[in-house]
Image 1 (cartoon, rainbow, N blue to C red):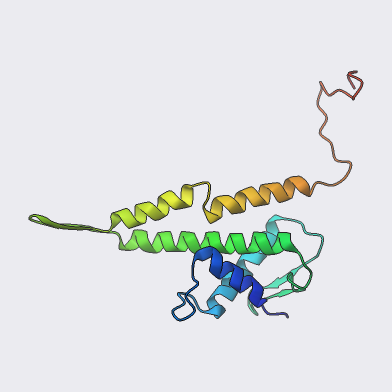
Image 2: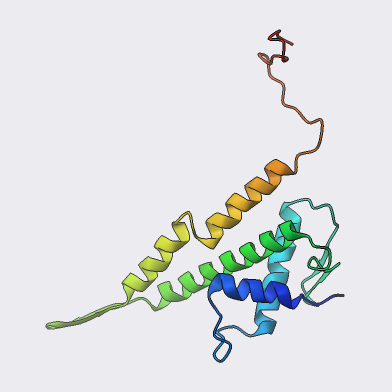
Length: 161
């Protein structure tokens, strides 16, 4: 079983902003698990020209999508992993959010959780980008010869068929 290619780990680090090599938030091993789980989900949701085997227990993907130059699989898997990471961050911030007041002093950490929620719902969030990229991939991955016909379908000559 192949391990996760370091290229995918690097791409994911950039997407989630974990780029300070002297103080990473996540270990490479943790990101590899996240990428493997995401690859498993993406592989279940979509069909690719290459048949991938994703082994969550062994943390690996065969064949290596980077060696295959499968940019669609790499992009969708890293976006899915970044989305999952963002949602975990939001859950963590939401659990810790609190508001305390004592006379004229107050501490309010709920705004940080609200900011994460607002970001996750924005069109530029990793989750939104994943859904949009997935939709574009599905639209471009339609089989040749598939059409949808209804009772008022017309051929190119304008005749009802």
